[in-house]
Image (cartoon, rainbow, N blue to C red; front, side, top):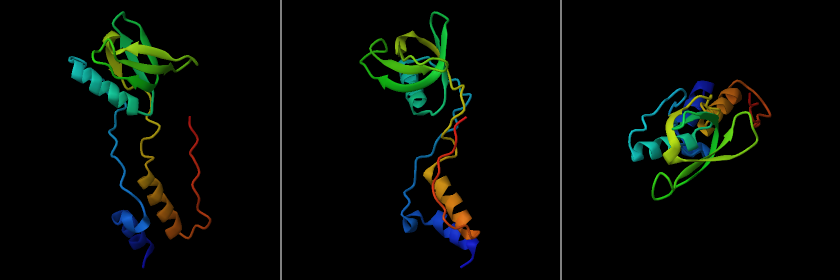
Length: 143
């Protein structure tokens, strides 16, 4: 079996390597969603919660906050729902009601983009096919 066919087999038959298919991620960097309806606001903020980069929230009073959304609370109305964000240059945690949000932008680099388990397995098999020994998992440095 050639190294190329070994890699192809590992990628095409993940169950043979005990690898489960992951979830596809959208490229949201730079996206500015429309927030016209309650459903659009809820949908965009749900995506912002799953995003692994900073977002910028512009409030209805004109101020903006850039940071990482680490939590959200769902309520019956937008006034009862809130996102919790850690501002980029602070160590505080803010809670912002959905009803106060005028705009949302995905401004930071998505630190999880291209770093799925499947990508790691593909790199592993490529290294192994090229004769690398003692291959282990090491986290990448964050910027």
